[in-house]
Amino acid sequence: MSEQRWVYPETNHASFGISNKLILKDITLREGEQAADVAFSLDEKIQIAKKLVAAGIPEIQVGFAASMRDCQIAKTLKSQDIGVPLDLLVTGFISTWKEQIDNALQYGSDMVDFVFRSDDQNISALGINREQAKMRVSEIVDYARSVGAVKIIFAPSFSTRANFDFLMELIDNAISSGATGIAIPDSTGVADTETIRNLISAVRTKSKDIDIIAHYHNDFGLAVANTLEALKSGANIVEASLGGFGERAGNVATEEIAFALQLLYEVDLGLNLKKLAEAAKLVFQLSKSQIPAMKPIIGSNIFAQKIDVHIMTTRIRPWLLEPFDPKIAGAERKLVLGKGSGSYAVKEKANLLSLDLDEKKIGEVVYKVNEFAETNKHALTDKDFIGIVKSVSR
Ligand SMILES: [Zn+2]
Image (tube, rainbow, N blue to C red; front, side, top):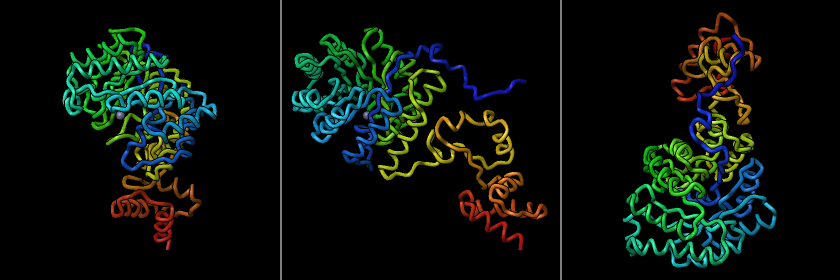
């Protein structure tokens, strides 16, 4: 039999109707900072933006047009020729929306991207009715056009909780006024893939030419699935945040959706995945957050093995047990000792650490390794293991 490599399921983008001309827009600097524990300085934001561009990310949302600090970041990035389109988000339901649009364009936003509530509960909380909401959306698009915006994106926030017919009316108003893009945000992370499919398909049938933007939250762990479903249903722009940082349970993680699209679906995003993984790690570092060991793409344990047969297999034919070559993510395989490790794992670890281990004592070491892991609830450090080997060698 010929040598096998990492082979992914039959999920080529073309067979699922995913466009090969997608834009992966990173929103870490805006939405990522809305995560409860995250606050970046101006310098840190510049650093993240540069990492994103180095990884090949083609568009960056920098912050809110209502925030002068965020506007300054856009201005600084422009003055340093960042080389990708920038976006300062306009909050259309706040009375200062005109001023925000002016700021966005003046400080270097390459588009007018605005949110306006679309669900009845939030609209009535604004003290207006549906008709007034529709009028305001048209007014915002008209104003953006009048001041020279070419790209105008309308994001009806809470769209997955909106009345379907009314949502479509809002979107029709935006498109007929000249919006060039429509986002379908699942602001509260409550949609499932079927809901997303229905909404995105409905918008795509309105126009072949408009941009459709997927913006998904991870409250039920569905952000990646919903994003993929949106792309299969006609969306062409994905908003994602490094590490998944965002409000509440966060957003679809930039690195996760990028790996899925490039590796599983063979979409040519032109990204350097290793650099993107580094960018995600940088965001954890700058926000002083610990990367969960099992976190996809960047977790320290995603290429770790502790069971004998798995260690043996990954040494000889890693593609049998791993999803992709760890090098793609800049990761390394790890042999760890813990609950379930047997004599092969123990011998390998002893070799790696150049420890003298009496063949007759291996059974005892294996027993103690398992006992240690069970008692201490974690894999053994090298020091823990050396201690055990010494204790049985006496
Ligand atoms: Zn969001």
